[in-house]
Image (tube, rainbow, N blue to C red; front, side):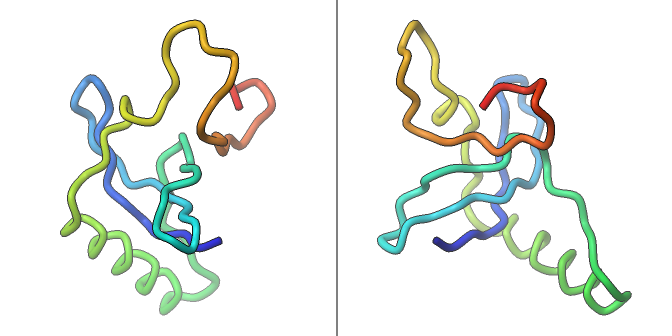
Length: 89
């Protein structure tokens, strides 16, 4: 499985950067619901991470509503990545 940063827009128009996970054929399998936070183990790593985030903004934004399940369906097409157990999966 591969992941990349992607810009994502929610229903209120708020834009964030998310980690998006892909199958080998390029199909999106999941994404982090919480926005990505720049990080690195050194100043160079941090800069590299931030460059990757900025570069992802040149791609078309994903619309969060296209992926978050709605309605009464008990089966979800995507696995949601959350940092704590109080948030939905």
